[in-house]
Length: 315
Ligand code: UDP
Ligand code: MG
Image 1 (tube, helix red, strand yellow):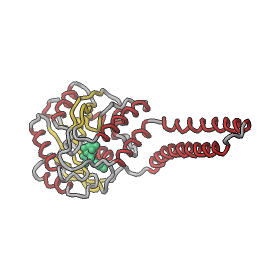
Image 2 (cartoon, rainbow, N blue to C red; image 1 turned 90 degrees about the horizontal axis):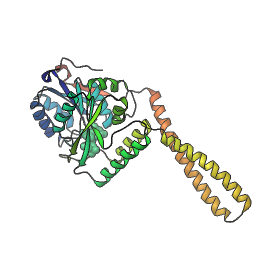
Image 3 (cartoon, rainbow, N blue to C red; image 1 turned 90 degrees about the vertical axis):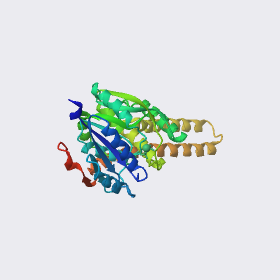
Image 4 (cartoon, rainbow, N blue to C red; image 1 turned 180 degrees about the vertical axis):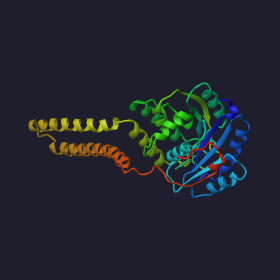
């Protein structure tokens, strides 16, 4: 396909980014004009309570290629990405943060790899400027642990900044998973994948919309959707505690020494183990429960700008 016939969709999840959204639009519009392909920018407003949506709508007056999907409330980063990918009409879809932490220039390298035949090109962070040691440390630990305990290969140190070919988009759109962990799903679908290294920049303005609670949820979704190891842990702990209790019973029949202290210790140990096992089982049961409810993954309140491309497809 000739470059000028190609359409590349850029999907940008937005949650309360009023401080920097105009700058992001400006930088991306300048970038897309400098390229020979066609670009569409799909902003997914994930229930922002600030002026983000209004600012994007205003920019649509000046830029023909800006599209906006507005959620009815905050459904979370991963569902915003999911919706954006589904609405994208491009031959390839790029997902990136709306805070310019992922530099647009890297898209050129991703597109080059795509032209070489790769169907997924993910951005691999070689450095992360302006992020706290806690965020860097917890992310490094999380990705390394995830690699050890999952059966699929989720590349280390990658976020959701990546290019995905239309064929992969089609497969991803078939996956109606509640609580999706998009980067895991992209690895799971397979196809020819590669990476480009980049330096993650500081946020242009504002603060991270990923508080600890959202990071923990993302980590739990990653683990529970791609690994059953924690569930096996529960089993191992369960078996171990049975073995221990039998041993303890035998021990007590031979000696009465410190029985009370031991009993207290044993009770605490058992309660701890049972609770942690139950907790893990609960996490999986909750996923089954959610899947069985057949709720829509997200609710789109409104869309705009989509009529302007000929080839758009709205699922
Ligand atoms: N985001 C979102 N919904 C949320 C949280 C974040 O759509 O509930 C967006 C946010 O506006 C940004 C991207 O997802 O464009 C990544 O979030 P953020 O930059 O805050 O995360 P960080 O880069 O600090 O990990
Ligand atoms: Mg960010």
